[in-house]
Length: 276
Image 1 (tube, rainbow, N blue to C red):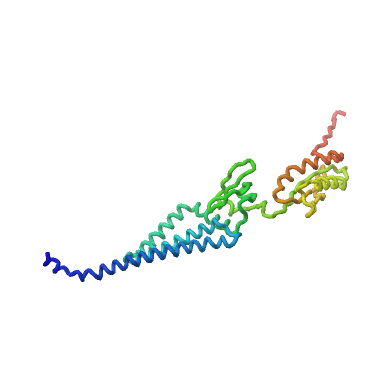
Image 2: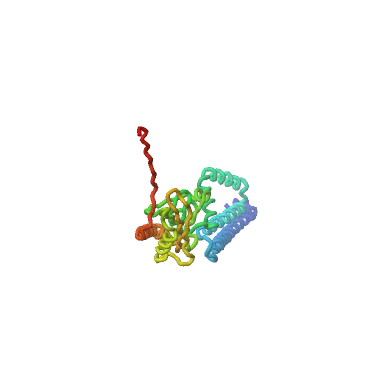
C-alpha cells in the first residue's frame, strides 16, 4: 500500500483541484453579486414610478422584472464561462427559442406592446368612462394584455389592448367639466325668444348645472317642420348622465306648461277626385 501511495504523485493533481475550487468560489461570488445587482436594478426601476405619481406602477413592475431577468441571464452565462462551457451555442439556442415563442405568441405580444404604450401614454386610467373598440364603460382594471370595462347594466367586458390602441379612444372623464349636448324643436309659429327663456329657466334651476361656463342655448337648424335649438349646459363630470337623462323631460314639461308647441313629423295628403 505504501508503495502504491508513493507511486501516485499527488502534486500533479493539485493545480487542477485548486483551479476547480477557484472556479467554484468565483462562480458563487459572481452568482451572489449578480443576484444583488439584479435586485437593485429591479428596485431602481420600480422606484421610478413611486417618485412620479403620473407613472403607472404596473408598467414599471413589469420592466423591473424584465431587467432583473436580463441581468440574471448574463450572470448565468458568466458562471458557465468559469467552468469552460461554450456559451455561444447556448445564446444562439435561446435566441432561436425566443423567436419561435414570439411567432407562436404573436397575438399576445401585440397586446403586450399595446399595453405598454397605454401604460406609458395613459390616455385613460382606472375609474374613467371611455368609448373604445366599439365598447363603452367604466375602466376597472388595466394590465399589460387587456383592459376591463364595467357597463351600466353591470356587465364585465374584457377588451384586448391591441384593439384599443389601434382604434379611436374617447375618454369621457378626462376633463372635470363637461358640456351636455341636447336638441329640442319648437313649431315655426312659436316665438323663439320665449322658447329660449323657458329652456334657460329650466337650466338655471337645475342644481348640478354650472353657471360658469354659461349654458349655450341657440337656434341651430331650421328643419322641415321645426325650429331646432342646440342646448349645451355644463356640469361636473360625475353629473353628466344625470343631466343627459333628466333635463329633456324637464324641458318638455316646461314647454307644455307655457303652451309652446313641440312639433312632430306629419305629412299633408291631398286627394284629387278625377270623376268630379
